Length: 327
Image (cartoon, rainbow, N blue to C red):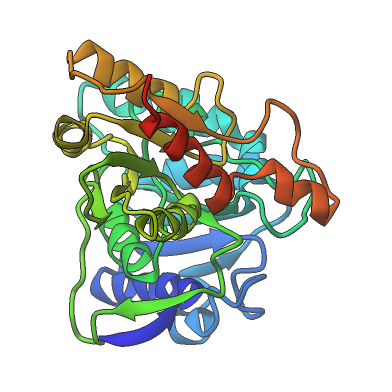
């Protein structure tokens, strides 16, 4: 195992898949010679050339539409949208075209397209650069949505997403770009299956389902709770769609308590879907399920306000303590 940063795991995944399959191409703003806004595509232009690593104009709707067409005709395009908020500028080719063409054409074409982008808060980027829109994309049949929280999951999920014959939206965290973790050594073809959650920490008192960068907050909260004799099981869904409810249900059956943590708003979000699924499955609960999310308001720019806005380990731990109090 080797220590690798979050953004370097993305670079490695792209490089390995481009070496493995000449149909894989990369396109986006500043992905070429400049190496990307976070150095995430550094060296790819020099290795694979201008035909396979293409800088685009600032025209998201146009180049995502081009990528959909390229996928239909046999290429396997990877598209970068610099910030998750700007995926809103290309919703038509994603939602109305990529997600539906295979269905509309009776399976005659595949849409092997991976779009990755950097989103979420924690870096004081303000309301137009801090959104977490996973639930939007997961609501659309035909789109797969992944949200890796560690370098090894970035590596494995991106590689699996590129090989998938369906459009995949990969939501990376700006806050985690410089974080580091162990990844399999070079030469290992590391794949993480889409739709399979990961238990990051085992426990028996409460199930904490945490998505994206909230996995780190959940693990810190679990450490705080462990000092008080409360053992929280922390689950990272990794895929928002397909969602691995089997792992979640098995955990909640053991713990009898469920708390869902995400940095998207609570209304109509991942937490609502997971809690509804647990209730529909008839899982007996020892306490009402809870959600820990930002308030239903745009993200503030001021660092002190954003710190209050995003779920913190302390707020997660406080919520869990309340769930364990006698009724």
